[in-house]
Image (tube, rainbow, N blue to C red):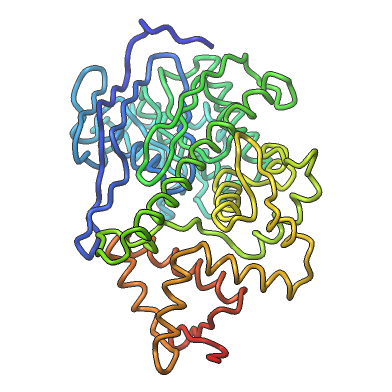
Length: 448
């Protein structure tokens, strides 16, 4: 549906940035210069990869954390803490196991000081609205994942918010349960059976974003910025097989691949800049790049699947992702890694093999390992850095803490561990290094 520019503004975010300080004192910029408005009568999906700051932005809207700079407003009133009128549904169910469904739903009202009789009345109404009637006395352990998440929705609805924030509310559920719960939520929205005036939903599922939202805000990462906004002018219920739906899907993939190309180009430009000034120390070394977190078996599987989907030298990303049941958090890290290693080239909504990628795809296991090793060392600076250190050490052994400490100068402890784990797995596959889990040491299997 089209939302008028004159519609009442529920949430307003003005030039918001958010940084966190790591345990090592490093400032990590998560969100940069975000401007956003939620108007009455619309559902907005925030779409992007993990790490793009979507959930952080949602917590800022809820008043759970404070921005580093910028301003947030709810109905023209500054947000400095949680405010009545905004409720949030989390990814995890977060139910108290010793309380019944009814008691869990009543918690929010109890915190607001609502008296017992009114609390019980409103909780029972919310339970009935969300389809939990008959389970009031059940404990969370008696419920399926889908039912537990319904309790989460009832707990949010019972405080009668006019803004509902949802942080990947269906990601922990199976496909059938997700479809059912999402359809019920849309039915509640369209039938106006609640007092909710606007919804913001974080997701990494492109189809889910189109199925639910009136507007989709696409996030780029490192740091999180708004890459694009796309209006969805389709009636409910939405048909995933319709031409209009497929065109929107293609458009979103085009926008998101633009973001990935920009990210990769930036990394390459930084590498070239440092290579041109090798003799000068830099604050941000070439290897300190946020590698996409990928599994080597999934990477090889994607390469093989790409061959089956190639038409006239290109592969359509939406079709490829749909056939492999990959969401944003899976498909873009994998395709980015293929691009970084020069095995493929990403364009707007499409990916195509390079000559090296074709050779890699058509080689046997041992030949693949050799090609992969060559490209890993040539194009991934962190692999070069680790191999250089191992080659230089007389024992050809170095504790992993050496590299973790280096990475933690630029990333959080958790992110540093993810990056190092990824490069270790890729390096072991390529046989350019070995890793001993018990000792936590990296080494060369064959120093010669």
